[in-house]
Image 1 (tube, rainbow, N blue to C red):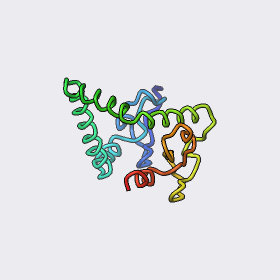
Image 2: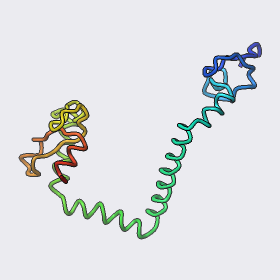
Image 3: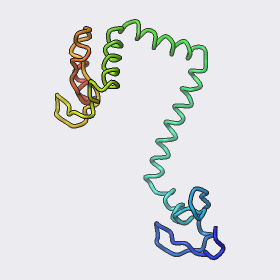
Image 4: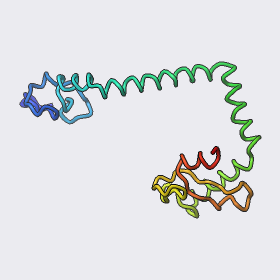
Length: 155
């Protein structure tokens, strides 16, 4: 950092402040944050930030719990059982999904996000729905949004 620079403008409050009013940031060219300490502190106290931090804390706490559970013997057994049982119970579903994934990767089938949902006509088609899980129907699939896909199967 050059010795001649003694002030910097905060991007939040647009005020010219001395360099001591900015936190360090080694990724920036001048080695300092773009907003001053006061604005940074005010941002940390905003309701949106606190709401995000609470939500993030809950998900991090849950992930930490699940990680510790899966390290136990019961957790390892349940994870192994769940995946294996699903594969054993639904071999045709897995083959159909695998066939559609290969077709997307090869370019013979477009990604579902390139289409609109065939049920509700929204542009957020996320999943493919197979009419049946027979080998001849593996690639006869319909793009549907997630909520419509759930309704087709469960409701």
